[in-house]
Length: 95
Image (cartoon, rainbow, N blue to C red; front, side, top):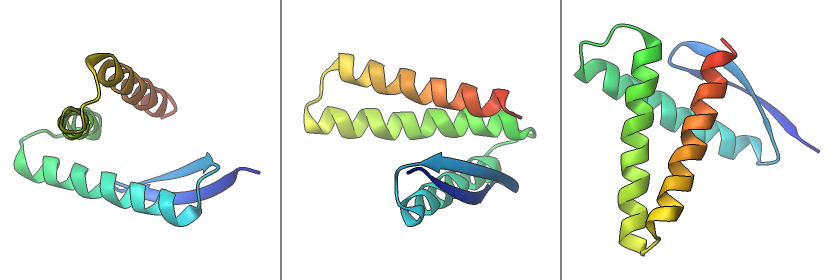
């Protein structure tokens, strides 16, 4: 049975559905919120859409670097990046 978790990211409310425990989803949301606030404070970007894109790039960079350290191949990295971009695109279209 899927859980529904209400979270706030960068001042916006989201309901996230999934199989993961609510505490895990909340920690993910806190992580993304923190990253978005870091990006917003370090740049002159005004729109939340652009902050979200820059944040996604920063998180993808972290993911790529970690995967390179663990020896995962470029195909794995490309698939992960595609999944991140699809998820981001879905969230942005739902607004």
